[in-house]
Image 1 (cartoon, rainbow, N blue to C red):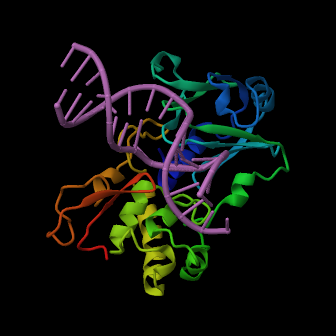
Image 2: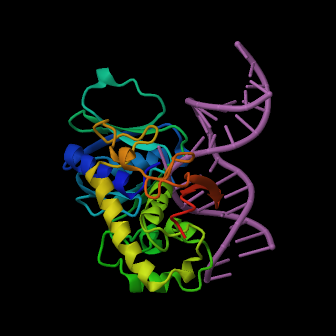
Length: 274
DNA sequence: CTTAACGCCTGAAGGC
DNA sequence: TGCCTTCAGGCGTTAA
């Protein structure tokens, strides 16, 4: 479900709500969502641990304890965190985990499709997910030169390259479509054939769109909510995603089309995106 | 090495 | 009403 702006929004919300709290225990419905531990181990791992902060790494959330231990979670398609200090109001479906803190407040993990994962790391261990991760798009790592290197020899369409987390970390299907439309670039262009001018535009657009989406608390297409259970607002600013059949807002000539690339829907304007 | 298809799940929506 | 297909902010595994 969430891409970088949604994860960023969730991380901010978590830091606001649960930073500094001490974990008491966790209830786990589906042990298979724990990548490298059992329910029992997860419990002994977090019991008494004080949360220093939550960080975002690509689309991962990293819960970091004062002790130096941490766990990494990926929300995949439908994972979300709901903070609750009022058990009376809890009537959500698909709650897969319940974290209880020593002050009796709780963090619920909801995940309809159950693709989300949790992975534990001892103090000093470096999560392998982080070393596999590509360029962090909101950092100074994102430069045209860097993209040129990463796309070198890649014949895969630029749309697919933008979704490859080992190249750039954090972009998903919505923002890939929006970014390519923003710079009038065809989603079918082989990544290695995007010229330097377009690569420069691409770096500017990636930053611009992700930052704008973060300012708007992300995109709520179906059921994404912030930790405070509010919708994002960026869905009101989408120009191509899920707009097939409507007239392109730029050229006012052609309708937005939808096709499939790597099993994912791509939305684009055949007139503007060459 | 890169690339593309499949599978993991649940539920909503649309066609007939 | 019901049945069937398609679709969904993702990615690890496998095979070519």
